[in-house]
Structures are given as structure tokens and as C-alpha cells.
Image (cartoon, one colour):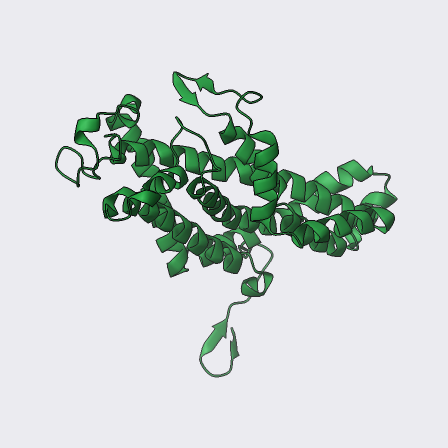
Length: 316
């Protein structure tokens, strides 16, 4: 048996010896499990999800809409752990069901953002030329305008209750502005995703296996779907994770300004907007603000861990 230096033996390999390798995905997951802040973030996100899911099982949805002015602005108690709002509604119930809507808006808005950004990024990077120039100039033009300003303009144009009436789904009444805000956030935040995807596509399309796919007659659509897009998944996952936190915060900004999801649908943002005139009643705004903070911190910690885990330099 040969030795390396003085103490490390190197086993001889024969034709029956196999060395098990680890895929990049396995190494990335192992790296993620060693990332302490990512684990903290995952725990925070899990806690928030369990809070809104288990809370909706234990607390009827009607409790979030039932008002009794005689119990208005009551401090936290055994009967109402988070207190009551200005018209006597239970804040705990509203935080639970408002959290469902805020998380739904954040996740679905990011789905829209990722779909549009990925399509634009792949088209710009793969086709190049005039297509690349036009799409990237459009992205840069939109990036030069503050997203909140774009969202406010879009909401002014598309939040007319006569054109977008409320709807009922599975026995619950929702404001149509919830759907409007999903598309407003998604369609005003795809630009950074498109630039990230474009940079990856520009690198991947020069690889030998893409050239070989073209040489054997593979169509451009097949080449993109089979060889190009899989290499974009890691940055897309990281962007999507961080995008959820940004979408929840933007919805909270809009709700606080009174331009977000309209009543009767509660969200963490519009609960805080209603509490704006009652800042002395700390419990009115504290609990929705607390869950916004926990959610965004957890998602950002988890996103940082994913970014470090999928960084090619960390896999060497």
C-alpha cells in the first residue's frame, strides 16, 4: 500500500472498487444544513406558517369579521390574547387570516415575477442581438423608476371597485384588489431576475454541450428547456426566496398607505394602516408588525443560506 507523506495511506483501487461521488445538489444541501442563520430562518418561516395554518383551524374565520363596538380597543387578555381593534374585532383572528392573505400575495406575486423575469432573461440571453438590446433597455428603464411609485400608479388604474368587484372563494369573501396587487407586484419586480437569468444564459449557451445539441439538430426550444434552464434554477430559487420577503413588505407598505388590499380582506399591512390613528394602543399595530418582521427576517436568512449553498465557489 502506497503512502502519502508519512502517515496517510492511499488504498489501491482495483477493477471492483467504486468511489461514491456527491452531486452538486447533495453538496449544496449539506452546505445549507451547516449554515446556522439559514436554519434559524427556516425555523422562523416554519413558525409563521404553522401559526397561520393551525390558527385558522382553531379560530373560525367569522371571528376575524365579527365586530362589537362595546369591546373596542381592549388590551390583550385571556379572551383576546392580541386585544381588539377599533370596532371590536379580535386582532389575533385578524392576524391569523391576514397572514394567510399576506403570504399568498407574497408567494403568488413572486411566481409572476419569476415567470416574467425568466422568460425575458432567457429570450435576451439566448437570442441576443436586437432582442437582447430592447429587452434589457426596457428592464433598465423600469429599474430607474421606484417600484413603489409604479405600484401606486398601477393600483390607481386597476383598483376601481366597480370594475373589479369583490368575490367569494370557498365560503370566504375576498377583495379583488388582492389579485390586482399580485400582478402589480409581480409585473414591477421582474427586472432583476431577468438580468440574473440573462447573465447565466450568456455563459451556458457557449458551453460545449449546447453546441453539441445544436450540431445534432436539437431545436432551440428543446435546447433551452433541457440544457439552459436547468442551469438557471439555482439563481432563480435564491431570487424567488428573497423576492417573497420583498413582496410581503411592499404589500405592507401599500396596505399601510390605505392603497393595498381593501376590506373586508385583512392583511398584515392594512391592519397596521387601520392602527395608524391609534398608536397609543401598542397591541393594535405591534402584532402584525411583529409577524411581518419575523417573516421577512426568516426568509432573508434562508435566502442568504441558499445563496451561499448554491454559490459555485462553495462547492469546490
